[in-house]
Image (cartoon, rainbow, N blue to C red; front, side, top):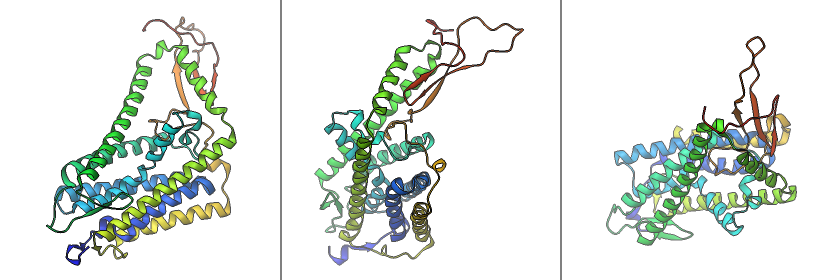
Length: 354
């Protein structure tokens, strides 16, 4: 690109320290899932906060009009890059006929917590919505005549190219529709459970029981192979996003973002280094079994919320206990590792609403 088309970039948005902080956390999380599982939750939360802070700053700069379209594109690569692992996941599901036994996301080394899954899902929806606005309203904005801006699709492509814009729009619309469909199914399921707790059908429990038993019977060797496949996919996605970000900066002649020269860049860079060192420290000195979150139950990271293990309170519909005696304890039906157990008394199901 000609020198006149270059410009000084916003180092507080995507400077070297910020980019390095993202990269270190991506690769650190992948490494920790194998050698230091106790560090995975903190890495996930740290990366979630990084994405949220960067995305919030992006919204503020966009509303003020102080950021160029290509800079928005670069920042979105950093904030959305961690979610691009969904692409190989869905492609793999299509190739395997959507068979749960071959879904690598159902057998993670470290399970995701419900709170993290919910926050991560909400952030994914927000970033995807912003992506739609960008590709519809801002991607084709011309800054200077004769100075085209470039994006990345395994090669240099003009950012305002119609096919590039339409392709990105189609991808984000499809992803957003899938996420909303998952959210709708989850909410429908939970609203149905809350509204019909007194009319639970044994067939629902049987279906859940059968499904969990099917996943539990998967051989350890297959689980290991699926985890390796998922790790390879994550490494490939992180590497592609890294290359895309650095090449986009180079192709567009952006300067002033190749050095760590401010506190705003030092903080994420130092945090990224600290996270990687914590992973290596935990791997070298070992970690106790109690410090590692359990991953025995199968799960899918794209399910919202996580329903791998849940407890449902069912109330009895029989006559009330005598007033002279102690109150009867509640009965819990626990679904854990495909095992349904009954406590104290057998469950009774009512055919009508109370």
